[in-house]
Image (cartoon, rainbow, N blue to C red; front, side, top):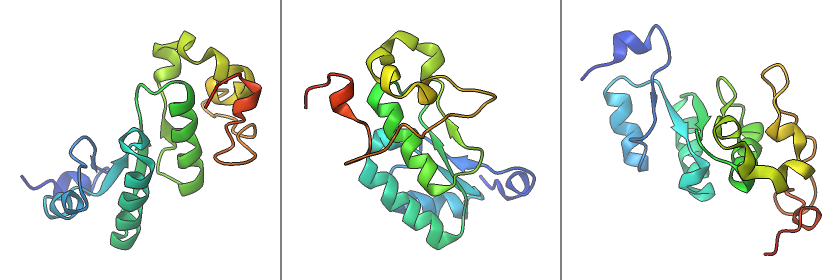
Length: 139
């Protein structure tokens, strides 16, 4: 399948099929124009895929549709640091609002979008800035 003509009109991103670095090469041969990173597939994996995309000069999106809690903090924190196209897909907040109550107390701006934007200023401090001690999570 050659998607080149369609991807010339709008970005077509390799999403669920992004399973290896070689998959990026194959997707580009098929006419895809970018990739969708998913931190739920692993932070290190996302960093490797990002490096490959930067090397290839293609855009990235961060798309973790149903993440909640600390997984959403990881996803939006990653997206905030890499300048993805179209921000970050983070719909788990609407699908499962009760799943993130502990995290939301400390990071309300991440779990309550305002005018389509998330406020990530609460993600700060040691490690990835989750501030575990403030929401009673045992590590």
